[in-house]
Length: 192
Image 1 (cartoon, rainbow, N blue to C red):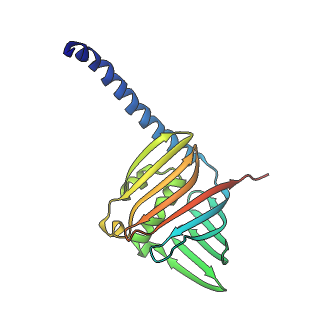
Image 2: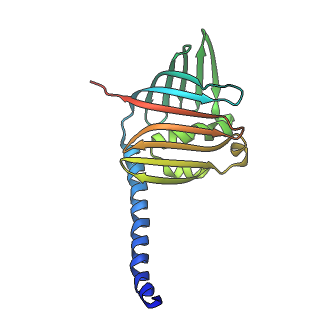
Image 3: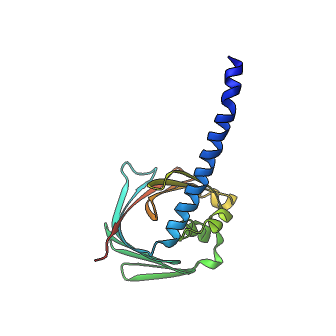
C-alpha cells in the first residue's frame, strides 16, 4: 500500500505544479484583460449593510470609467449625487453643494480608492504595494480578494472582494472593520 502511494506522489506533485502554473497564467490573463479594457459606462446597484439599520440602504445609478484614472459615479436613487475621481482629485456634488478633495495628501483614502482604480486598469504591481492579493476562479468568473497591508487602512477596511468576467469588473464588496459592508453590482451598458 505504501509503495503504491509513493508511486502516486510524482503524479500528484506534477498535477499540483500544473495547477499552480495555471493559476499564475489566469492571474496574468485577468490583469491583461482588465488592462486592455477600453472603459465605458455601466449601471450599478449599491447595497450598504449598516449595523444600526435593519435593512440595507440601496442606491442605484450609472458609472463611467475612462482608463487609467477617471471614474464617475452618478447616483440617481434614492437621491441624486455625483462623485468624480479624476487623477488625485475627488469631487462630490449633492443638493447643489460641491466638495473637492486632493487625495494625494490623504494616503489612506488614496490606497482605498486605488484598490478599484488599479483593478480596473489591471495594474497588479500597484495593487500589491497596498494589498495582499489572491485570485480564484477562472477567466470567465474570477474573484480577486484584497487584504490591506497598512494597519491604518486595515483599521478601516478588513477586506475588498472584486468579482468579474474576463476584463470586466461585475461586483465589488467592502467589508469594514466595524462590521458594516457595501456590495456594488455592476452591469455594463453596451455602446451602440
